[in-house]
Image (cartoon, rainbow, N blue to C red; front, side, top):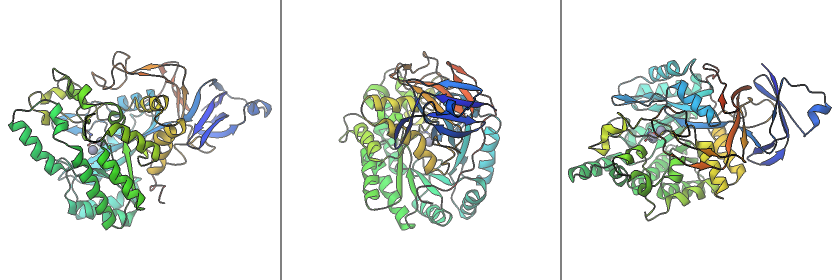
Length: 474
Ligand code: URP
Ligand code: ZN
Ligand code: ZN
């Protein structure tokens, strides 16, 4: 593999920005040089990437994706091949996807199935969390086995979806107690699914079937309540690390901030859709178009008691929200979202997003919502540390994997299917959005995978990453 010098750029890390050159040998970052130092040392590279006027940042780490996730009779439309390629286009060099255990299934079989889907198909590196959809004696033993032998150190549980993945409080407590012994992080989908199901039935009985009722039947209070309950259970289990996924609501954020203030090991992520989309402008679109924005927790109203979006941006600035992920779970409008045309509860939940996280959060920098450093921290460095992949991932330093993005702040990106996005969906949730910046060049372990608006990656280049325990605690 080649020796590559990225020169004349500004490296951005969580702790600052500085003009330096990056020297890559094969798959690894070999050295960081002062500008001009490589030439004076007689370093010769096979390829020089000129990053004049550009930022050089660690490759993005998206710790929440669902490639090929089965949902009832259908499946999320991105395969590991199409999804990892779209991720690379968007400056992501590692994804952590959610392997699935459904009720009645064995955890180890679920993980094996995910390995089979991904192996040989990814253009960037990948790792797995494990969804636990059936908690009992055997699955708890399997959980510890995965932590100790498989590099799977985080487990997603659901307080929502009583018909499918739901765990009751007793099951959640048992999983948390197991995690307090094996060191795993518990990831929680925090919505009160039992109460939500009652509200859904009441809306449908009144003939309120449009997509907007998806959000109205999942009030933010019930996200706050479930977040509170998850925190209390984690405390009872011995302050086990708890990571609230895809947070959408001020009430939930306030619970996390309070828990952090009390010294509990509680972390949280949000996603671009919750920072930008609204019930009024998106979910309420006529002709069933609102279905394009159906995900859970739902897109919130801008007229709620709380201003969720400005609270979430504040949470990102204050580190109450440590990570931005995408919860990429793509479905097409045609034939998939339309399954719920007469009943919002039948609309498959999830949005396409893996390609646009770096861009949409960078726009937060342009808008003055967070700093350039915090962009890198929430999208690259903290996700790697939170899920045991640091310092191979999430940092530009000697010894790290050469996963690097050259970012051009002087160009623009127009998001959407008309701007030819690469995710396997027939619509974009951010159609027409213009970003004041652009992914210029992307390297995955020393291989240039995007350059000059061309995909140069290779199916199968991406390797499975066996993860360590959360590096904020171990
Ligand atoms: O609507 C969503 N979020 N779909 C993906 C599954 C999940 O709950 O994360
Ligand atoms: Zn979820
Ligand atoms: Zn998800």
